[in-house]
Length: 236
Image (cartoon, rainbow, N blue to C red; front, side, top):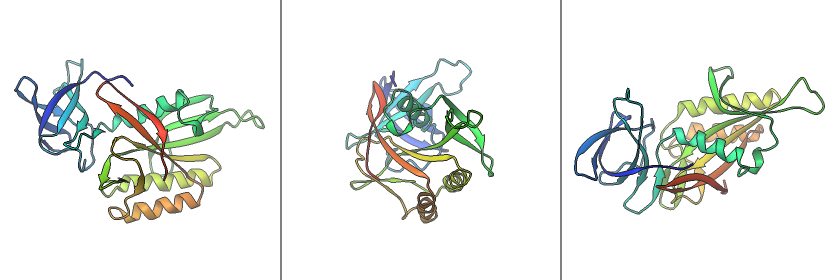
């Protein structure tokens, strides 16, 4: 994914969706933050903010926070919308080899018993039964929390994430394939664990899901201010 970004300095993030920054010309402005999470370690005052500019004249805040460049010179994609886009690109271009051989890719499809939407749904025509395609349900999560030398998800208690794990277990029970895809969007993270010290319920549910057949994939992104893309699988 190509990026066209400009640089600013973070003053503060607040109300989850807003941040104040100092632009390169010295002026201060407010930008949009497409991230509902805690953004732990990703939003420290005086960090470098790389932002995009919308051409939509109806937007109150035309600038969107895309990347953080920390004082340790780590680059982090904080725009959670990008995770699904990067996952789709990596599936379509063959980078994620475990998710190939499909006939159709759909985004944001309603499913499950808890009023959910799956991030990506792959369909493949069944050779044995042309009337019943094989389905792969893919839930995408963004990993940006680095503590010491260890990457973690989640960065806060996630009841929504817990719900998604229950839904994925139901998918497997019904005979379809369920995949949880963690996209590592922090170039300082080289290994990954579930943050049981932050959300023990999520960690326990994930282990249950794995035991019941939900597959877990972890792919790391290459990040720079000019482009971002998923490039390699890392261990879990």
